[in-house]
Amino acid sequence: MPESPADKSALSQAQTRLPLNGLKVLDLTHARAGPTAVRHLADWGADVIKIEPPATDGEEITGNRHGFDFQNLHRNKRAMTLNLKDAKGLEVFKRLAERADIDLVPHSWLTHLLNGYSLQLIATLPRARYLEFNVSQSHLTRGIAQAPFALAADGTVAIPDTPGIGVSVDRDFIAKHRVN
Image (cartoon, rainbow, N blue to C red; front, top):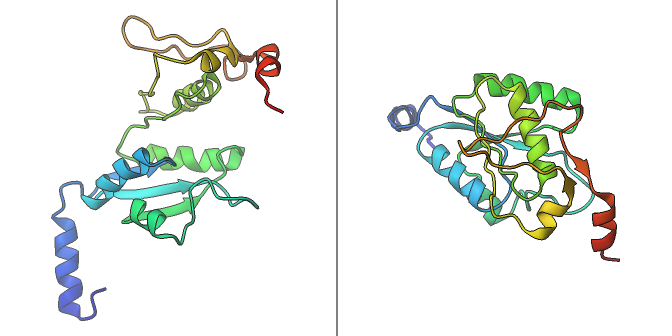
């Protein structure tokens, strides 16, 4: 850390010369590839705010906060805890997203349920237009939800206009594949 006023001034000048200085980015990533990609934005000067889920009694989804790997993946980022399953947390997130400079790209291709949640979130944000969508889904991925989403010829996925998230859970399929 800089100790003298000259050191602090040099650090401040160096930070203002980074190519992404001034950009605001919200980081909702959890797995290796996402945090690594966003870390690069932070390393190049973007103001990255990592949104973390509330702590649980079990193992944290984001890993050991004090561990080397976590510190490396999330260096140069600020962090805040938001419960995106709660209306208040979602409202705070929406206000933050309105001020961010990078469009939201949810990484939600594991199931159609996650696609449904992501599409509903995207529909509420003014500039979020992109969704990572896996076109080569497995039998298990496709079977969890009835009337799954499909990629249109123009590369878009329609946002459902029905109540809820736009998918129905296929309970028979889940019961058939349940592991006891």
